[in-house]
Length: 288
Image (cartoon, rainbow, N blue to C red):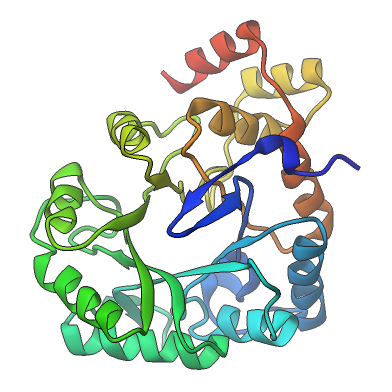
């Protein structure tokens, strides 16, 4: 099977990571709440990801809550050299599974400690602060207090690098006046392209952009044109969508998630798929 080396690598914080990583969100139960229906299968997917060369895992302690971090620890601890684990904070879950704001300095510090405990780490590689002015997408509002709180945790050695999630360009620039930003994690995929200008701006600065929902999220990308193109290329529609993102910009790091080893292998194999000009033109029509 093709390795993911052909997708190349890019800097994330102080490390070079392969551009195809793994997102752990889907390992929790339905609605990203509660335990997985098959714990052994979830552990097997994580171990297979590392066997296939993944060195960047994205998670959060509010997935479950606590579930995905505890699975990662159970499957992979002690962690191999070079593995980068990225988590995010700024929200919490109630007993019904609702997503609630949790971005006071005290709540952010508690979230960092929760992530450290559940992952079995003394310092977090990268912590993304997720802005929650609008749960459906970025919305303006100052994030200075939250970034300053994270900068303090960085100075104390609990956090190595700080990233941002669900943010606007203005919020990115505000954060950069306080602390170096290692990455931005916003929604972006073949049909959701509002962040084109941000991706290009970050590329000029050498900063990673990590799309969440790169394959559409809870409603996977669907298009007759995409399916026809995938058949012509001898690939799956999701592999084509991954390949398009990899060719979109060199600073894009991908974290497609899955509960299936079969789908995991398919996602990683997309790193060897090169789209010709005809394919890119067809995909441009789908996206616009």
